[in-house]
Image (cartoon, rainbow, N blue to C red; front, side, top):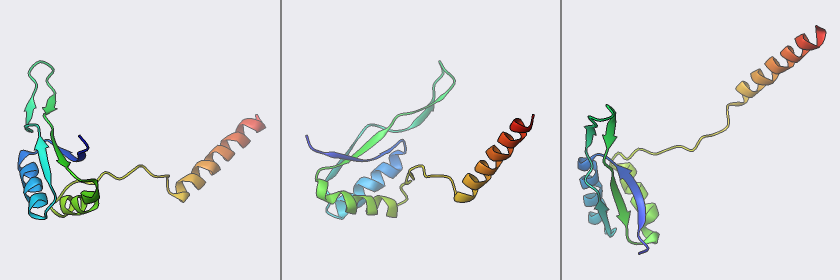
Length: 104
Protein backbone atom coordinates (compact mmCIF):
# COMPACT_ATOMS: atom_id res chain seq x y z
CA UNK A 1 0.00 0.00 0.00
CA UNK A 2 1.56 3.27 -1.11
CA UNK A 3 -1.08 5.61 0.29
CA UNK A 4 0.19 8.78 1.93
CA UNK A 5 -0.98 10.16 5.30
CA UNK A 6 -1.69 13.87 4.76
CA UNK A 7 -3.53 14.91 7.92
CA UNK A 8 -4.45 13.72 11.40
CA UNK A 9 -7.24 15.14 13.54
CA UNK A 10 -9.61 14.21 16.34
CA UNK A 11 -12.41 16.32 14.82
CA UNK A 12 -14.82 14.10 12.84
CA UNK A 13 -16.59 17.11 11.28
CA UNK A 14 -13.33 18.49 9.90
CA UNK A 15 -12.33 15.05 8.62
CA UNK A 16 -15.66 14.75 6.78
CA UNK A 17 -15.19 18.21 5.22
CA UNK A 18 -11.62 17.38 4.26
CA UNK A 19 -12.46 14.09 2.55
CA UNK A 20 -15.40 15.72 0.80
CA UNK A 21 -13.28 18.67 -0.44
CA UNK A 22 -10.46 16.41 -1.59
CA UNK A 23 -12.86 14.09 -3.41
CA UNK A 24 -14.62 17.00 -5.11
CA UNK A 25 -11.22 18.24 -6.32
CA UNK A 26 -10.50 14.84 -7.86
CA UNK A 27 -7.97 13.72 -5.24
CA UNK A 28 -8.57 10.04 -4.41
CA UNK A 29 -8.58 9.81 -0.61
CA UNK A 30 -10.05 8.08 2.40
CA UNK A 31 -10.05 8.30 6.18
CA UNK A 32 -9.60 5.83 9.00
CA UNK A 33 -10.44 6.15 12.68
CA UNK A 34 -13.45 7.51 14.51
CA UNK A 35 -12.26 10.73 16.11
CA UNK A 36 -13.89 12.34 19.14
CA UNK A 37 -12.42 13.62 22.33
CA UNK A 38 -13.36 12.13 25.68
CA UNK A 39 -12.28 12.26 29.29
CA UNK A 40 -10.50 9.10 30.39
CA UNK A 41 -12.05 8.25 33.75
CA UNK A 42 -9.06 6.14 34.81
CA UNK A 43 -6.36 8.78 34.31
CA UNK A 44 -8.44 11.95 34.44
CA UNK A 45 -6.82 13.12 31.19
CA UNK A 46 -8.38 14.01 27.87
CA UNK A 47 -7.87 11.35 25.22
CA UNK A 48 -8.10 11.99 21.50
CA UNK A 49 -9.13 9.22 19.18
CA UNK A 50 -7.48 10.23 15.95
CA UNK A 51 -8.76 10.22 12.38
CA UNK A 52 -6.16 9.74 9.68
CA UNK A 53 -6.71 11.16 6.19
CA UNK A 54 -4.84 9.49 3.34
CA UNK A 55 -4.42 10.26 -0.34
CA UNK A 56 -3.81 7.51 -2.85
CA UNK A 57 -1.36 9.25 -5.20
CA UNK A 58 1.90 10.98 -4.25
CA UNK A 59 1.49 13.49 -7.10
CA UNK A 60 -1.64 14.86 -5.39
CA UNK A 61 0.24 15.86 -2.23
CA UNK A 62 0.72 19.56 -3.01
CA UNK A 63 -2.88 19.99 -4.15
CA UNK A 64 -4.17 18.08 -1.11
CA UNK A 65 -2.18 20.33 1.25
CA UNK A 66 -3.57 23.44 -0.45
CA UNK A 67 -7.11 22.13 -0.10
CA UNK A 68 -6.66 21.17 3.56
CA UNK A 69 -5.16 24.54 4.45
CA UNK A 70 -7.96 26.24 2.52
CA UNK A 71 -10.61 24.59 4.69
CA UNK A 72 -8.79 25.42 7.93
CA UNK A 73 -6.22 22.73 8.61
CA UNK A 74 -3.63 23.67 11.21
CA UNK A 75 -0.10 23.95 9.84
CA UNK A 76 2.78 22.98 12.09
CA UNK A 77 5.73 25.31 11.71
CA UNK A 78 9.15 23.74 12.17
CA UNK A 79 11.13 25.17 15.05
CA UNK A 80 13.48 27.89 13.93
CA UNK A 81 16.52 29.63 15.28
CA UNK A 82 15.99 32.42 17.81
CA UNK A 83 15.93 35.94 16.50
CA UNK A 84 19.39 37.51 16.11
CA UNK A 85 18.71 40.03 18.87
CA UNK A 86 18.15 37.23 21.36
CA UNK A 87 21.44 35.65 20.36
CA UNK A 88 23.22 38.99 20.75
CA UNK A 89 21.71 39.52 24.21
CA UNK A 90 22.67 35.98 25.23
CA UNK A 91 26.27 36.45 24.07
CA UNK A 92 26.47 39.81 25.88
CA UNK A 93 25.12 38.29 29.10
CA UNK A 94 27.57 35.38 28.97
CA UNK A 95 30.43 37.82 28.30
CA UNK A 96 29.47 40.01 31.26
CA UNK A 97 29.14 36.98 33.50
CA UNK A 98 32.54 35.67 32.38
CA UNK A 99 34.14 39.08 33.12
CA UNK A 100 32.57 39.20 36.60
CA UNK A 101 33.80 35.70 37.39
CA UNK A 102 37.29 36.51 36.07
CA UNK A 103 37.55 39.64 38.29
CA UNK A 104 36.88 37.64 41.44
